[in-house]
Amino acid sequence: MPYALSFLDKSPLHGEESASQALARTLALARKAEEAGFVRFWVAEHHNAARLASSAPEVLIAFLLAHTSRIRIGSGGVMLQHYAAYKVAETFNLLASLAPGRVDIGIGKAPGGMPLSTHALQDAHDPARKPGFEAQLGELDGFLRHHPQGETGTGLAAFPVPPEGPKRFLLGASVESAKLAARLGWAFVYAGHIHGDEAVIAEALTAYRDAGGASPLLAVGIVTAETEREVQNLSVDNNRFHVEIENGQGVNVGSREQALDYVRQIGASNYHIEERRSLTIRGTPPRIHAELQRLQRAFAIREFVVDCPATEGESRLKTIELLAALQGAALAA
Image (cartoon, rainbow, N blue to C red):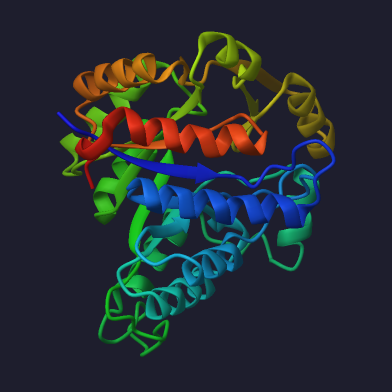
């Protein structure tokens, strides 16, 4: 059975590259994905990250929409806790009005950075008045759906009204996120590239379907090349470290050093750090195809979102080419 492919990009800087070069490569990747028949191309949100250029996905989405013609472009995702739901809705309704039928909004619960950047983003907020994530997401959903009298019944609405609203996705790696997505009628993307325990994946996807959700997506890391030797040269450590703070939100970071730095920045004394294995597939295209088919059968997945952890530009472009070639005309949209 054919499966659809999409791509997630973080605009990483490789070697001595500038941010401009990294962002130019993101555009090249989006165009390559469009040419190869990928369904959607998403960009991530990261803050205070010197080696990643995608700090404002909504700006990058507008640029990519203007330089592509068919592929869906979206966020993977907007870190909603930093922003007013109303402003996020206005931004994505405007994007969807500029490119009807091509805009996705993916929302994440994580901060997308360390405590220093979170504080800088939220310093003007009154913590006592800030709604929880579930309330924020519900408010955003109302503004995106354009309730006749506004979400609050006061006539407040997030204009403009696009011919076709942005498609809504919730990104997560837990049963709670899966149930929330289903309750709101949002598509759910399980972040396997962050937390790849297959028992947890099964539990979350089952919870999503049992709660009325349909057709979840699965994000996976992929490292591929034409030969096994090239694959070994590209291999990267894509595992994550989960930091759990007492009475605080758990976060995922890329290394134990970052986990300890997170703890230091937040000033926590009671914490737990757990290494988590990502769902990353390494190998030549036939091996990648076989593993994607196994995951498709195991979890009834119709679409995979590909995260390419390698930062070298040519290998990322080649990844899209190889993934498209291994399916050929059978690539499903």
